[in-house]
Length: 432
Ligand code: PMP
Image 1 (cartoon, rainbow, N blue to C red):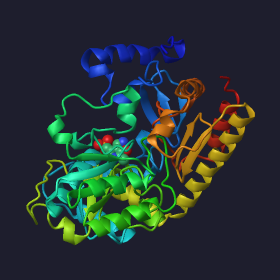
Image 2 (cartoon, rainbow, N blue to C red):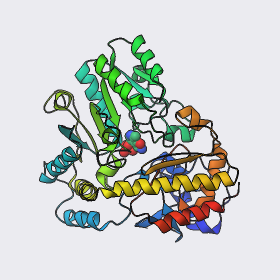
Image 3 (cartoon, rainbow, N blue to C red):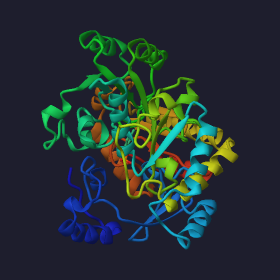
């Protein structure tokens, strides 16, 4: 659906036209282009607490939070203070710094199963390297990923890869040779028999199973009871490395992510988003036995000019320290998420709109569907056109949701009760 541009977005519209002349599609990451929901992307200029402001001066309650990193909200004083302090010292040296060890030690304190952690600059890099490490460690090539899970845009992962591609209707992307994806095996989320079948068909060949343990790239989809436990058991029996991609869930679902929340230990874990407090940081981590295969300790190569960048590490350190010192934040986020789920569900049901709302802590997603959503095909069968209308109604009324049904919403701790109630009163006015 192409929407007409009202005066409300006049500057965004102009800027989008300008941007398209120099930047492919006018954006530097495809989901920002609003292709799935239609219309013109809104250009933002500042944020404060739970709000963001566009270049036309419109205010929004933000449920995207930069796709996860801004868990403390915008302009958090502790994060700003740390960055200001660092920026005048230096933003990068390309040498080791004390603060990298400080952040590594804080993370080891929060996630005790980690022996060693390597910082990189994005979730993509973290997942790409975790897979390489698992392959180097096991001396096997094949790996299993789940339909609808996204692990960044490294070539081997770009098969049935959830939100970003689904939003654009791309199944498999040109430019990735089939020789690179021939070792990518696809199982169905929440369907352990699909995993068992692949292990049966590929004995002693599977290096890794990588999974978003609570998925966020097909909306928010929690694992069914026993699913991850069984996956853990199979990987242990088969000598396969279990990788939890906690780029979205790490330091968000609980201090120690899904590993802690569900008490299941992966062999390797990847991080992004919250770990950098709004600056580009990713990481992969795990037990010494596996991590010691990474260069320069071992032969599995990985490197990065700006890895462990001091400015980004300071933002991450300030964010994680604050979260760690104020763990009640996680209960508070859970309460806010639970309240939204309950109240949005009530409002939509009263309107006669079938809805399924999945929520775990500060991750939540609303789909217009009358059945449980526990896999990629479930969310694909929901009423996406209605979601798109819902998205635009909320946008026009100052509530900023992710511009795709396939994306999870992320709550920040800056959301106060009045933000939540304002959001609900906007939803009450939605007419399909
Ligand atoms: N893994 C997951 C689960 C993600 O959601 C994302 C990004 N949304 C990535 C990996 C890739 O992270 P980045 O965009 O930082 O490369």
